[in-house]
Each structure stands twice: as C-alpha cells, then as structure tokens.
Image (cartoon, rainbow, N blue to C red; front, side, top):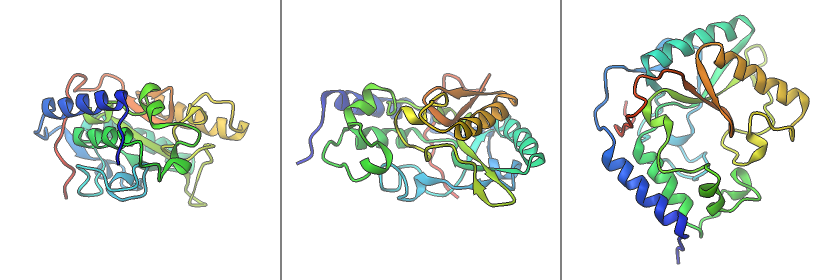
Length: 228
C-alpha cells in the first residue's frame, strides 16, 4: 500500500495548485537552445527513464531544451567562451512544465517507492527531500530562464569531473562542498565562473543549476508541454 507523509501531502496539494495557476500559453520569447548553441550536447533526462523518478516525466513529450531568448543568447555567449577553451556544454534540463514539478512532488510523497534511492538520494529519506528543499511545489525552471548543465572536454569527449552526477541530492552536490576533491571543486568553480560571467546566478544546493539574472518572467510559471 502506498504511504504518504504529511509534508508530502501538503507539497502535492501545493504543486497541483501551482499547475492550475500556471500559464498554459507558450510566449514567442521561448526559443530552442540548440538553435543558439548548436554544438551543445542535449542529454535531457526527464523525457526518458534515466532520472531520479525512474520514469519519463509529465510534460516531457519530446527531447527539447527551451529557454526564453535572453537566457538562450546569454548561454550562447557562455558557450562561445567555453568553446575557445576547448569545452562544450552538456544540457540536462531547461524549461520545465509545471506539471513535471507536480510529478516530482507526487513521486517524493510516495514513501513505498525507493527504487532510485541508492543512485540519487543515498542516506536521505523522501521527507528530507521536501524538508531540505530538493523537491518543492514550484520550480524556477518553469519560468524559462533556469537550466541545468555541465562542461565537457571537447577533445576527449568526457565531462569534467564535478564530484557527483547530475541530480544527486545531498550536501556533496552543493557548489561549495569540500567533500569532493580539489580538482572537482576547481571544475565546479570553472563552470560557475563561466555562467556568472554571462549573467547567470548559481544555486547554493546544486552545482549544475543556474538562473539568468533579470529574467523576463520572474513571477510567471508555465505549463505548456514540450512537444516536437
């Protein structure tokens, strides 16, 4: 029997309310990032089962990376700088429909499903994911100016070692964590410096997460699905 914790029930309710309140239109300001950064590697995890939920996520009907135009243009400038240093960008997630965030909340409230715990949240419980802010009712991704990414050595075709994989929940994934090696800390600083140099703000709990400063829709959340 599926069990739900009290914080989980509240988060699921709030997530449903957020979906109901989200804008359903797709403004013309949303663009395909690969049109601006054609050599980026689109490794979009939420339209397949290779993610912390273990299943394709609601709203991800096609492997698209959309952002508002100012964010895509800023990312293109960051990619040009990275390219000059022999690096490419690997994109994990960009715009995220509000219904996907609600899917995350439902998953996190299901205490019986621990199939991905070892890979994505070892040593943590699902209630902790709510309490510590890894899962929430709303996400900045749904505003279209937040993305998740890493750096790739273009010559070797290998990601720079950041010390943890994408979407590993816990303190080791914090950008300033000293639980990873000095080289891994340096790689995180390199990614952060690149993104901050082009107008993005880092998130203190995830080394891969950045939001454009001065984003055009700071108070709007969207729920149009990702479709080809």
